[in-house]
Length: 156
Image (cartoon, rainbow, N blue to C red):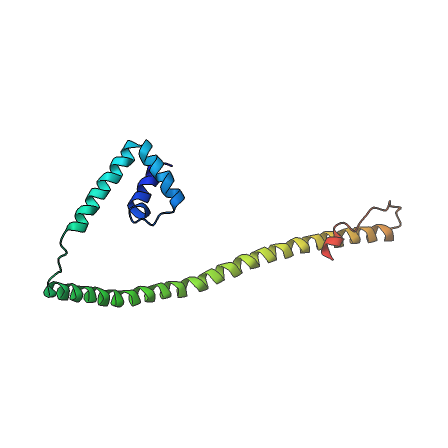
């Protein structure tokens, strides 16, 4: 186990005796092997023992009253501020949605119209080939049959 993890466990579960027995054994083995972590544990236990032996002092009532007033004033300020932020955010969203929808419609229409133009060009090409074929037939010239229905399957 690495020192960083051992120190984290020492600061939390190990000192409070809320650690799993298997993990406690691993930590104890590490403490035997690592002098730095062992010293860290001893320092921590000394500091905690000092805290446990100190007399608990209660704050005077006027201090709590002043603290409570300042806390409530802060809450009121936040309550006044947050609706303004929410209002500005709503305005921004109300502007952004129509713009986004408009851009999406424009892009989709460009996509579909470009596809229609390609189809139209293929249709004109096919019609041109058919006209050439028919004029050749009516002129009485002998022609060799070629596949004149190029790309017609795509149009259907």
